[in-house]
Image (cartoon, rainbow, N blue to C red; front, side):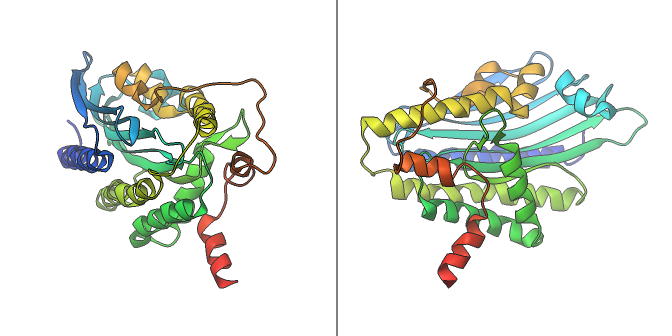
Length: 311
């Protein structure tokens, strides 16, 4: 028997998918989302919604999935042997947006709930999720706004919550093989159950509901910024780093593939175009060099902004 509140979580997630798609399609103004419903033979399914070749978004997706089964994949039980021999339910919404304009950041987020059960033993459950921002060009105003909204979403749950999950995001999206972060971070949390179900679920909702407030003002400010082939080439080069992270480090991608999820939906997060170049270095003094020097390593964005305002 699944957790008695699983249906409540699922209802919230389906509504979140609806709200995200409606707001993002309105922001794009040139394309809508098409939907694919799918079934997983081993149990469960989902609905994938994808937007392509819009006025703003070259590609994006907002996916809902609810998968379940009698046995967890090796990627789950290797790290948590106490889950071996348990049935499971995993339900979540994930989204990723790849704008065409290089001055509009790529963004990603997800919120999810997991439960594993075994007769005669207490269920093991937790919430996870977060959102993160991957700009191609350095705009401090945008990064500060992004983190301010993230902090506000965390504030009702305690002063220590934003610093904790901000640091976790910096650590999770760190590309060890490149010695750089994927972007400028945001929030990341996992295995959240020590707060109890109600507070943990409330926090998941706060994070999911904050995304549009964090992202859409940035889109609006940057979408009409002129760009050239130079900026486009750099965007595609940096998208290559995005692909590297998803295929090398991302636990969600691995879990989805090993658990028999729908491959098209799992790899929806990939950009439509990307490029790699051998031993490329940014030109000294360029905006690209500033991104590497000041934006691809963990920083206290809000603390620095406060100090600058007080100076």
